[in-house]
Length: 489
Image (tube, rainbow, N blue to C red):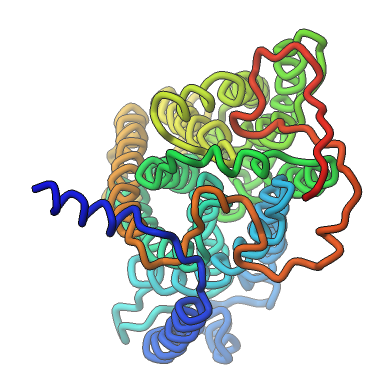
């Protein structure tokens, strides 16, 4: 029995070999060739992007090309696309020696993920019953970006601790789980979640946290000196924050119904984000004895209002209601960074590099609850009969559904997101624990040199004024200055 245990321990906990010279090219080439074949077999342009658009216009009595959905949706698509590749990417550059990995691997998994998402979401949402083909247009590529966002959120919990091969595996399974979860929530339960508080943020947050729990590294203390930030890395991360903050109204309104719903979603998100900033600054300052602001709070918690407004964005939550949601989220998210993240690492063994629990998971849950309550309290006095029908799509088989019933289904959507996030995270985490994915050893985490060619002049930098305000290296009750001088090796 002892020999068997030693054998298992040697298999799961053996020496790490981060050499990906064979595994990464093989996966990239094979999977991209598979994408080419699958797209050739299953994917076609939809009627608004096909060359037969002119014929379609005549059949539908459309008088102008301006009525093509491209002209309504493309500005929002641009904003969402920038958020995915620049916003998320630069937000992950805060680690002092992992900026290449933060923005580079974000690029890699997003580029693969959008292709796989077009297929998976197409099979569930855009399959033409006549010819069995997936028909894609501008809304399809927006939804593909949304799907990838869930995987990028999960990556935030694992930042610096996994290999690019593991990230490709995570994306393959993450996109698949997302497509199934999204179909159940939006189509089967008929839940409204335009900005994805449940579908994207709750799922992605708990998916990543569960994987991080499965992949717990007991000797991560060996990489503690690289787990913090330096002045310039926090400035780059703040660029990502500002891109996300500015474009989040587009994210929450991108696929809302044309007209008042889309208009209202942008306004509500805009207000929630603004309110969230003030409470984040307030809690960050009041939590330090000398009132100094913590950049990690400003980079992350200021975005939580946009997350929490994801479900109720297109509802009649009122302008002051949006401000209240943002107000509460700033407090909740900053509190998470101050108290919950250290607690989770110490007692729950969840090492959350970017603090996705505080930025995505908790605000996503709050957004789902706000959406359920707002839906349950909806009435014709507030929406009008036609407005109520359009906002909640009470048409066809759902024509007899009441706001109270809709609120119950909205709450059920939260449960589905949690089940897929946690359950899927356990399965994918166990797969990623296999010892041949090329992940770094505990004492080589958070270091670009493991997977990237780093310029030589990086090694000859003069002493850097450093402050470790990320992860457990900064304690919330520290009263002294957090600045230390660290000399490069």
